Length: 218
Image 1 (cartoon, rainbow, N blue to C red):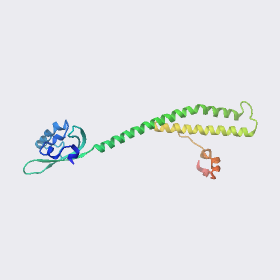
Image 2 (tube, one colour):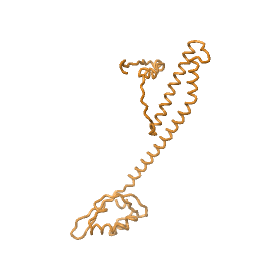
Image 3 (cartoon, rainbow, N blue to C red):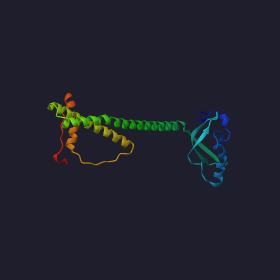
Image 4 (cartoon, helix red, strand yellow):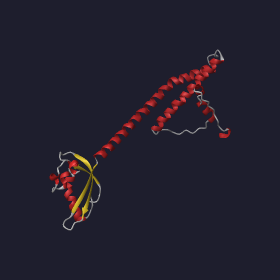
């Protein structure tokens, strides 16, 4: 296992100081840490899991989880080190972080696009709503017949509905940006439900739609 992890043959390591597998500053601090532990009993590495870096035979370094335990012996003090290569785990963590940052950037772009698009759509939409309202109210003369009056009313109603959709999109953008301010108002629930009914499309699909709201709903 150590041969695969560090690239050394067993005879290249047996009998050598373990710090051969450590880059600076761990290599310089290793002997001092063990000596201090034996003299003071203060644990910095001993019996404490720690993330460090190992050094391969070719000089490259890689992250390791290191745990060193004291091995009781009547002849001399011995230590056993357990190592786990963290390269794959750290790579996965970095990939997750990169993916999260990429998703956040994409979300910001989407939010900005929706906000800009919504503002751009409002300009022609206001003209549609304004002029249809003018025609419906007969400010420049009456319409020729009831059918024209009906169609102008549909144009105005559709424009108002479209404007509500745009406002909803802007609200979503504000929510994602953490800038939405709650505006509580009373609404006519029946009128709201009625405005959302897509009766014409439902009839084309052979679907029957109905509204069932309690009269005392408020």
